[in-house]
Length: 146
Length: 174
Image (cartoon, rainbow over the protein chains, first blue to last red):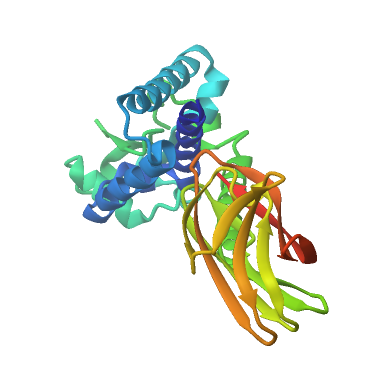
């Protein structure tokens, strides 16, 4: 049934979008981001189920998406090189109090955003950071100096 | 230099060795998404109408309809006929591609009669005196499972006698 194909395409397209949009854009949920997330979900739903209001349609679409999610998760777990492509890799942003500006620019991050992240981790100065790493989830991990 | 956290490889995660292409690939893919949006803005994926016309000695006909539509969308086809000579039994004959996988919501004004003519839909419009202008609106909806490209043919007949034919392409995006 074409609903399976549409669900698979929607999954692949949303996955593709999340990979190219950039991890920082997706990691923070400001009110606007939350609304856009809901709107995006609605748009995707319309493309997948269209005018199908049946329980069968629900089972097919949700089942397809769940199976693909498990498949991606398995590929991430099983193959390191696939994981690098599907999930991304961490990037070091601060080393021993020194901000790596080139790495910041690569992820379109400002120093202000880095400082905000540090404050949220109870660090009042970037100089007190031993390591800051932008994780593949989009969160920034701060490891303070001893 | 501080010892790096577990799982961090400095050459790859700090110096970004082997990762130079990453941002460029991301930009290229974003450009691809932007290109699709630009193509949509210029109407590639539907559904601005375009007009196709044909003329013969007894009459002239123009069809205004989209050349591209998408699953589930409503659209209109407008048929304008100008009779140069009187047409005793003006009949619009549409090939099945007009209707296959489509829902016809309405035809206005309603034809005098409808019939199948060799598998085509024949809409009898009645008598058109010389100089008359007749406009027929057909409102369609694309069935969500319909995709592909097809040739639409519309023939204007006077009774069983063909007067002119118009062919158009219709692309249906999923």
